[in-house]
Image (cartoon, rainbow, N blue to C red):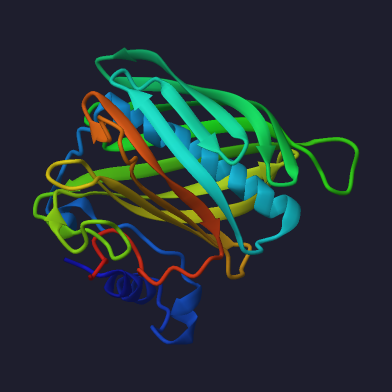
Length: 280
């Protein structure tokens, strides 16, 4: 199984670049599915809806970074969905509604809408739509919304788009440090993908995401996402840390998804990198 370092070395060699300092500027890459020894993740609708809402929440945080810079920040986050995938995401003062759309032989579509305050910003007119293929191996999402400017009386318009791959590892991976049942080994879904965000119709930033998630099955479920800005250059990271909500039933199963935690910006994350690279 290739670690991220090995993957970067292969990319550098393929591009004819040495694996010295030049390799540090290369964008990360996902392992090939054949290297993962993985199967289709087959996400529950409850998980699909939760992750759609979470994608939108992180896009709002990316807009905040564009408006205010990548300074340290942390926002409370709570996600609750039902067996259909319908539910709500609470990010700071923003409330997002996740609404299942059409589904058929090729996949499922979800819609997300909402508004509210995010720190010093006012978020309005959130309209998102995205799909999963059958088996949940691929998802895409496009989100439009407005956010107030701290230097203008008029709001700015933002559009974020994502494309990501999901896989369920065939073996068992350790729950990361900082989670309740670490380092117990569990069935784990990993995902990798790119995100871009536009401001006033011009592309403004590009992020790479890696993540790990695991269901309740003798353990408290959890969700760990790390988004790293790859363009423009600079140290900017968004980390999602969620666990099953205390006292709530259906923390992550076919009947529902109930997890709570934080989204942080440029807060030190000593856990390392999620996904197949993670070593506890």
